[in-house]
Figure 1 (cartoon, rainbow, N blue to C red):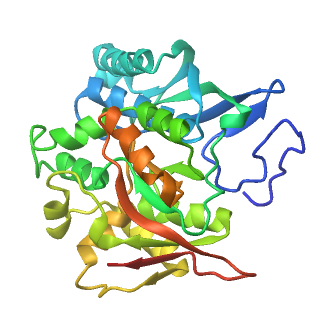
Figure 2: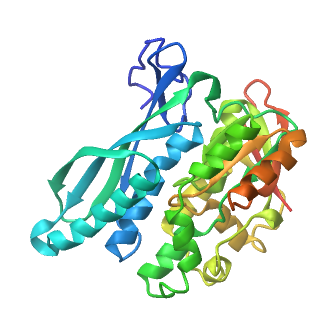
Length: 325
């Protein structure tokens, strides 16, 4: 990817952010378009719920930068000959319901015949230029606040292996279908320094990206991490998606783990667990924590303080995240 050219257009506001959650393009002095796209294979058997989760996940990048979704295009890969149109209709219905909840409009889409189903959205939104929230502006002494529990990857892996029932996974499914809209509204009301959403790279991966692009070091408290019901027990049994191992191996090179790795293997695996439609990770000044907590509470959202921003990175310093208890 590094060999590909980057547009020099000055209206492409965040063109220099390596790990930006969404593309932001200025269309007037005060307004910018926000664009993102995401689609993936089913994480649950129920096609309607899969549609809801995929849509909520696609909107997440827009909310992470403080934007408001406007329109969506459906992206569909589907084996119509073997699965039939009724299942596809349910997937699209779930996505449409979540799009309506987000206040956006489905304006079209594209489909291809594929042996493995895939679904998601291309989302276009808007943001006032004064309200743009970057993931690359965390500051020393900020506190780190997470808005959804971890363990979605473990739960969906267990569902696929029939190690848990849909009823037992209900809390995680509710979390994955929940939009990050209200969390985004709360952060804009209060004002935070930085934000990103937690998805496929897991908490550790997205924390590394925030730290690297903000040129700061983050300290994460393993003991403070929240989990979906049953996630810790399943991970302790060894039900861990392959992505968690990949995340831990790749991002571990810029981390300092100040815990007994063997003793805390389950916690570290959950911190690396690839999330589908995960929560927002906000970097907030300490003096605004009470206001942010109160704003999230008004929307019925728990805000979990899971760490802090410590010091600026100097020169070519590699250490970006410290994990401890």
